[in-house]
Length: 127
Image (cartoon, rainbow, N blue to C red; front, side, top):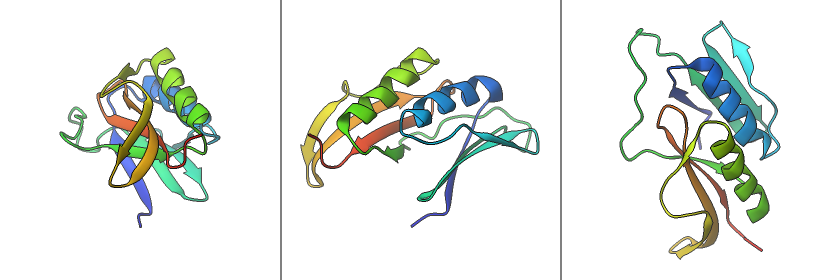
């Protein structure tokens, strides 16, 4: 459905450390620097990147926006959350756990990255 997701960050290296940790918990390799002001994280399912805003202004998080990363297991989603907290992120929403709704039963772990962007790891068929 999409080719990539890119979010703006203010401290590129702090954000790289954060995303290397949380995405590493999902089995995605470390970010690869591009042109000195952005990192790309690639998988067969798509690309995610972090960048300093090209207009030179401060990066700000989207109000109401969330970037969701697919986890294969609830343990992997929890590891994503724990890696984020250990690397400058903050928890948000409810604690990691099972949610039930119109989409069925899911395990979801929400975080805010060091710049306030809301992200989550989601496992659609939790054990």
